[in-house]
Figure 1 (spheres, rainbow, N blue to C red):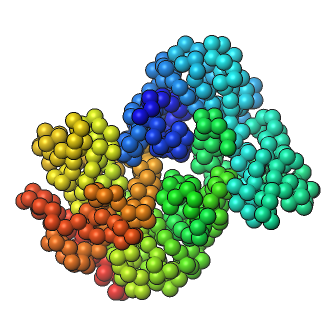
Figure 2 (figure 1 turned 180 degrees about the horizontal axis):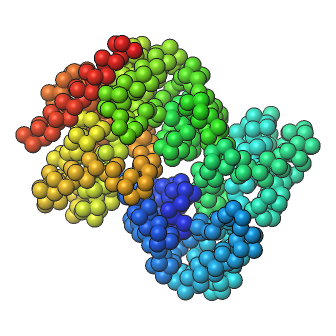
Length: 596
């Protein structure tokens, strides 16, 4: 195992950092076997929000993330840092003069440069992202004379990726077929995206971009303007600045510093609720190969309601700007016939959230309408081999509604997400025992994805002292495992909302990736995972025809409930309670289903 490296991210409570941190922590940048210590720096007023980000990183249960520290102190943040990614800066506010913006950022980057000079390793690599990035980077260079100036760089890779994406779109080729574009100068609207040295792979060979495109006026006109103004276009569409594509560009930039610079049938993946924050955290991981493999070509279809099409256009721009080599197509639509046509995998994230004052029956009624319609669309348009994963809450009952509305697709092809609860349970035991999440196996989430769920550690193991021992033997605190552990997992979503002021997205997206990847590739030998599946024929006394979370193993894209686990009286009571809630939900939902 290599030595742990310390990676600092500043502005860590912001949206770019939120999109970035999971990729860094899981190994996209430094390799999947590289232990990472993450330090997150932001200003004091953001420490509460940053606490929520830390919770989510813990809940991702990443095997090589050894430590996460959140701080507002530069001496803590920059101490012995190996890589510093300086994302945080003062944004330009309405009415602010350019000189005032520069003055504010000089203060920030002079201070951070001095902290690098005093506390960081002299071999540290420093990447400046916060705008104006070029000048902020130069300020940091001048303020850290003991660190070689060659160790500093600023981000123009996003502009580079945007240029690749535009040529690829123009030529209808994959981004990986476009090479050697150049961004000259400043990361601003004066940048020069230069295609005169670029090549495009067409007709089985690499040819110059100008020869391939055959439109010099475009390459010297609209191409330049589109790349230069792309950030503004994303903001106009999304009402937020680029984060997904910026994070991807940072990963590309840092990975190339670290390692140096050097296909099967396309599958159609549908994500519904695609303009929402969970989908925003999910789509990049799906598109880049975290779920289906890095060599698997993907066609992504993004479905949302008509009023969200503008926002969804911004998400499409960002996915294009990530310049991902195996993302063959991105389609945004509000039409179910387009979305579900020939789909291989449908990830149903969108649902009606519970609004203030809304009765539970009204929530169920609204979601029955949505999932009856989507089930019918699956039945009519999707491949009969399609795998359907329901995320939108109430996930279990929404999934059962979809099952009943798509009779031509085997009900075994449907599942709902309880993997986030599963990962949260792993994370809590790992934190309690001070071990890596990968050392905790075979926790179970029984029942409903709700506060009645039963997180069960009685069959789990923890790797301690060189061997796997039962969780109860390892933890040596039965009252915690039957008390606070359950409550923490059951209430973790609410805790993240209270801290972050938004619901879990990073950890939810990670859980969706885990769930779908296990369906696609299977579960490791000797391990089981939790997912909501049809209860028919189970050996645990759960009534048939419920969508209930069980421990499952998966082989050849087919799940199987793990049978024969001993159930004590404590577990029986918890399992029956959550089954009762699911039965009540089903009865209410099916009243609406029959009348809808």
